[in-house]
Length: 527
Image (tube, rainbow, N blue to C red):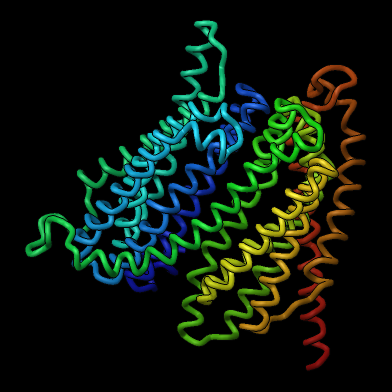
């Protein structure tokens, strides 16, 4: 690995190292966030998670307007002209903070209106006030990260993610302990304050790094402007506005989905409390399990994007085709494995981790999403690497709109089943559209038996073998049970899942060894 890195140019080496660092810290944050979700589900309950899931899209919309798009524009603009990096950063920061303060003030003044008429839930009003305070911190954090990305210093943004998760988790745990000692009930405000603390921590961390360890070459450079100028504003806005529009539309559609699901569940016949509990179980308990393995596919996607972009710039079509085929194969291997895991052990996972049987039922049903969801993520990243960002945006919008049709028309008649069907149909639709678009750009090898038939056969064999194995071992592992007659504890289920993954991985390895041996034999016979 060190020899491979040393053979690269300093720019490519910094880029690859930064990508790997971001991938590693992103995976660590996904693990920390997963356990944080479990802790929150046990403290504020399903209804609390449902209410929090309705509030969070408000922050997402604000972030899309004042932070996310400006961060991307900053990184691109600074990377193109690092000599003016500090000036561009100050200009972008001024714009972002001005927008964030305006949005925060708007939420603060209109919290009752937003809660009652937009979110359709008056109980959200006091929590919106807390969310509003986090918007300027998020803007500061995003702009500093964009500056570091542009200067090819990704270590600060990477470690800020870890700092945010650790501080949030530590603060929330201490708050719960203090409230328990005082005998005070734990409410949704815990999750909202945790969000605020996390955003403030990441902003403080990145600001401290900027003051103490500014990007190389920016400290004391002669002739560098000390403040942003209007000449930097126009090119920055030219980059930021299209991104802002795209992200705003996607966030608005996602927010509409979050708002309408509880409302349509009430139309189906559930009480207000039950509607939020069902929504909380889905979004706060079941979905984190389904999304957790996607940390691996997301890492593949992050690494693929620059590889594909570089291959396209060098006009290496064969390399792009090989990368696409490899990405398709391993995304499907991973997705089909996860489907097997969640179908076999989803019910037990929900019961042991969240103590909620309905969470297990949702995990089992949502497990069928995994191959299509992971495939869509990987294909979308490749399309972005090829410069087809407008295509991926349009396709994501259509997939979200399709899901909203199921929400608006299906839930009042069929309940949550309609939404589950909507997610599955939209993910299949998105993956297939990505696949067709990609094939039109770059033809690649698609082997259905290799990419789908083989992993389906192997996960079926692995599942049967794993079940038989544990039937033999169960008499010796009774201490792992919760109580006589009840399901295994989380440790027991984790061991079963690990053994299933081990059997599946071993079967794939043996298959590949045998296939390679047959290829070598054929070549030998030819000669």
